[in-house]
Length: 473
Image 1: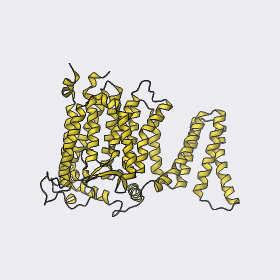
Image 2: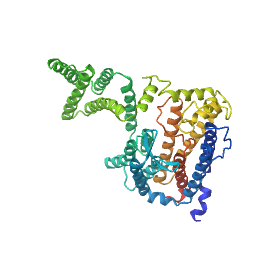
Image 3: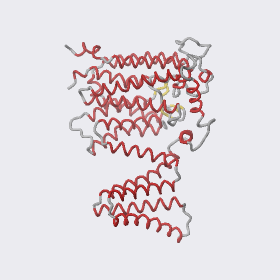
Image 4: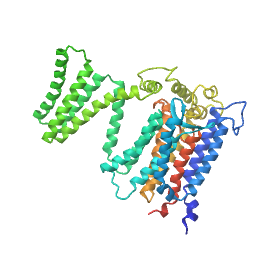
């Protein structure tokens, strides 16, 4: 029987129904978030909820078209789609419109188009295409370099647009690589890097350098308990630090104590690394290299924090980490968000009865902070339903990805899952004060045509691929 005749029977209608449920609930909450007694009709296209209904209608049309297109199209044209959207990412830097400090939008009349949103599904397609190609081996250095180029080329141009939140989403692809065989060591070190980033902001530099050195010395002792070798390593670090102290004294300079210790640890690590390489002591070489990298990373954190992040982003991170407290400034959005969600109690204040929502206490409540409306008007019960639907969708996508017969469909399916997971986790996390406010939408809920259409495209391509799984080798 021709596969076209089987298409509708093979579609995973559970996933489609989850999509409809989330989109419908999102529309109702947008209506509640910007409710105006003078424009009570939910179909009023002069208001955001009316416009969102138009975007929803267009999204359904996009989803239908995607389902009607043969799956080979997404495989064969993946590089072309990627290249075209990458071109738009570059073009928007020159002719884009500045919105909230980010030049990431094309202004078409009253409608804004954001290429970075659509670049996500294009990156997922190309990643799936490349990783499913004949002879691909994930541990091959050339393969890893190509994957890095596929993922981080868009990231570079999105950073240049000053849209840090959208750029960070692309790091979620690392989880796809882990599923496809990338060593868990990469995830382990990635977690350590994240911890070190936070510590570099929270802990004084001198204390952090001493702690890192102490951990490294402990590791040196554990991997090789020969006292003579450990004494040589300890001596290399102590002599390096003392020599720099002496040099600072003789030159009558007043370099900060943390800087001298840092330079001494770096010098000691280089000495240990060179000696270990010459004597082929691999464990010592690795520890010295990790310590060297950790120190250099902590140095880069301050530079990146002060030079790459906008002042409001720095303030939000400082507020989140407790470094600063500014409830009327950087912390205002999050504080009002937590008040709104907490005031909902167990069952909420009732639909259209949220006081925090009605009086606009929470900025961006129909976009990035749409979850506040759910918490205030639907309460703990409503938020649990929304979170439950998202978790069900994510688990469903993983289950669908695992049943695919082609590696292309499986990799793309996991890409869809991790992108939605990142958006869902970070967006809700920032509304309750567990994540920094980086300005990314809640999938299918937040107001906006670009985000809704991009998530619809992302999801429905996978639904189409899954519907044709019996035709795949």
